[in-house]
Image (cartoon, rainbow, N blue to C red; front, side, top):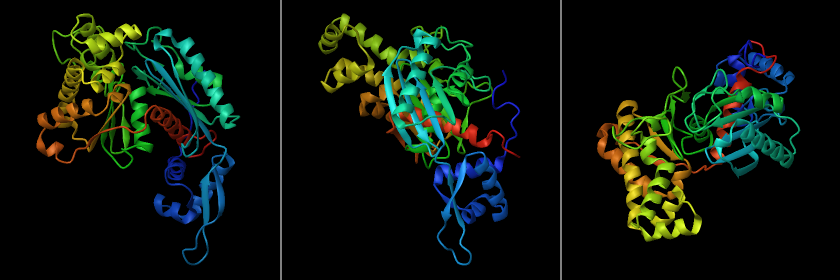
Length: 402
């Protein structure tokens, strides 16, 4: 079965119009004509077409600007998107309106290694739960993020290192069949970057990097306001940059990758080794109490003043800062946002990343470069996934005309 996007006639003007309404709120036809640099007559025709498609409505008279009053245009109140953010160890699912305001969100622990059938079944059950909670009967589209490489155009995962059983699985089409709506699939870091761009600290940034530090490490790249995926969708896979020829073996099969040194799984591994070797009584007590350690436990040990945990965080931040310094020199971004589960450790990790990045980059590149923590949390993935599918739906509305 061909995907819903194949063969659609794209209307760039309709897409721009809908994006303006999504990002700016209700606008008059006069304002839309000014922003889109077309005539009011053209705007009126496109609004009529979008009204027939159930995507836009006329919302009454606008404030007078002198002369005949224009008409306000808004997104249809019936538009609803689902955002499904799948991580290595958990799921976040939500429903939004057409402006991507979240109406209901749920989070649940889940191991990606359980395979696509199990994980997607849980995700789809959660979608139905949030739809019921928000009183939504039908979706206009759904976005999905997964923690591994994705062929965006085919909607499948490709050789994901931490996702056994997912290689080549038709995630997009399976979710689309179940929900009966258009679906887009991307990797989790790109989804988070788009969420940050829409509703987070990167809202006014045109060129920025979003670095996710979770079980793995990845980077979303936004250039002149657009997400950059690379030729094959692999752009930003910084977790597998080699930082030491003789380092530990990574999940990808290579040795010495950044992720193998500084990801959440690496922190948990090194903390467990320190606890068992008797180098940290704090970590040893946490291990005895909980049976296993996580990156969050390392953060707890840091708060208790444990010097071994502090050093683990410093080492992790140092490695990440080294790689980011190279990216800054190459890309010269205007902002770096740090997100992901490991950032729950707090500002000790951020301080080390900042220090190394600033020291090792050219002063011209870092003189006006903020490096900040994301404030969206898990909801950022839901918003980002919803935004990705909104862009697909708004640029190729079913039945749209060029």
